[in-house]
Amino acid sequence: MKRLILDTNVLLSFVTDRNLHQQECSRKIFEEALALKRILLISFHVLTEFTYVLDTVYGVERERIKEMIRELISYPGTEILYGIDMAALLDVWPETVPDYGDAVIVGAWAALKRKDAAVFTFDKKFQNILKKRLDIPVWIP
Image (tube, rainbow, N blue to C red; front, side, top):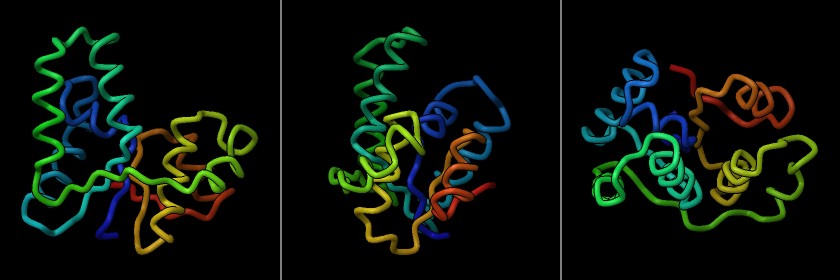
């Protein structure tokens, strides 16, 4: 898939050393976006989770987080998604997709009218729900 909706864990892996394999996979897709070979779609909610985790879990200075977000939103090949399909979100949360943040990603995918976009997440449980229960394309590096 050329268009990828990114989960928060992809962004966190890109900017931290928490998992070197995931960091490398994330780095590759950002390089592809830089070369305009791929479009990376980032939900506004994912940016909120990203900010919260960097601030509260990793203790990154807020000014540095702000710089990271500025870089992300201006990075070639990236688009910020502000709209979601709330009906689609509520159709899956909390019964099928127990995590609200993951349900937001489903809502973002639905808002795109499912146009050749796949979800990129490192969360295996979420991958399985997307593929097997919701028939949503998942991109696995």
